[in-house]
Length: 638
Image (tube, rainbow, N blue to C red):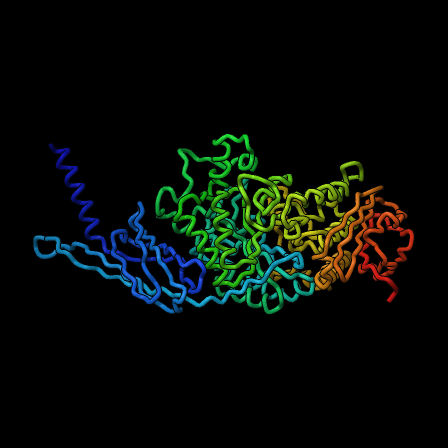
């Protein structure tokens, strides 16, 4: 009997708590929306306290509340809105009404009381005009925390989960920010850069985590804790908007790093999760296998595929359940909002192969529907062409039909690095590059692949080349003359070096001269040594020539089998023909040009845009040892 009474008392207390809880609203996301979207549907995530049983009403011409969705957590509501095509921009009220019971009088009798809450919500006119990112571009990758510090006052904040900033430690934040990027746009434009890709800029209010043997900050940005605010240590939304506007004014596009697969363990919605299925949950912690094969393997087991897709990337990076429609809507709407709010020009999608494949199709289609030419490039760090092309528009007959238009070309990167370093032989050296490009038959448009020699996760290119300057120049020549959209990692143009030993931090060192107190400034010619200046000028000359020469960046590619350590290929259109020659031998090599008559045609002179020397193409040509030539073919000297 006592047990029954106790249960009744507890039940009555719970009812009392429910009935007397005063509702409040803390967040609405997306924070605003836009009229004129091709998709008329919008789902608002509303978070507060005790709002799950609120009645919701909206009165605004063209806006209709289609459904109020309740979920496991009574602190959330998901509101489905329909927005008519002719709806005008403006602000409307979302009204929440709840009846609570409050004690009244000496006997504390519960009396019904209506609570009304109103929040304003803004619909804005669409203004975004994303520019098309193509093979005419040169993408420059910047890790904002390590590039330049434009505003030291925002380096650290005591109230954040990680309050430190210390340049003496490679593992902590260093204070670089978006203002620092803005201040050096002229340097980038002079170099020949046409597009910026920044590692993630959204809030990463993450605590330091033990990785290896040291505590590390989330300076890299890949653990979001708030989707609608740029990290204030980078300058916040205002600084990002100003940087993008300044970049656009100088003819430089901006692509953003998308992270759909996971969030940071400190994300605001994980402190009070909407529902258990918001994340991919396991009985015990399960990491992803990091093996992409089970996704496309026709013989794969279900458990292997499940671990690959739904295992967590790291213990402090919870895996989002993209099969949950609320999660899917949240991520897709954020992507659309970002394009409109910040006016970015494209996306690089992080850890693409770890996302639910059906979600990625849906997400890409939503972006393409609103922005048909949107650049979306997928990071799929794999070792061969099949898994790389699997997610792209391809010429294969597969059950899964990928729809993104650009792969981060890890396969070509690997071929270029080993091809430059290996001794020339059957299947080695330049043959490896040739063979990889020969596999382009599987892509619908390989010219849109993003190609690179290094990035924030890989060893620095100059170090991989053994600090051999001749190999450096050949690699840059390949990057800027072969097919695809070249991406260069910050500092590569100045021979920045290092291996990922003992950690990634070694390849993410500060750009020298970007921070107060730097004794040397490599943004300036006077701050670079002679070889660094030679490297910078080599990149600048070739990048700017490429930018102004459609045949080189958008023309057809004609390549010849490498022979005796010589690799020759052509880029050509109706206006120009560019002949590229690379010599893997240490000694000079005389080349019989009759073999290349298909590419040379009736042109008799080759003007080397690197040395500004001309070559007679009548019969033969002598290539310098470990050298490169980028010849603009002409019919006569001028």
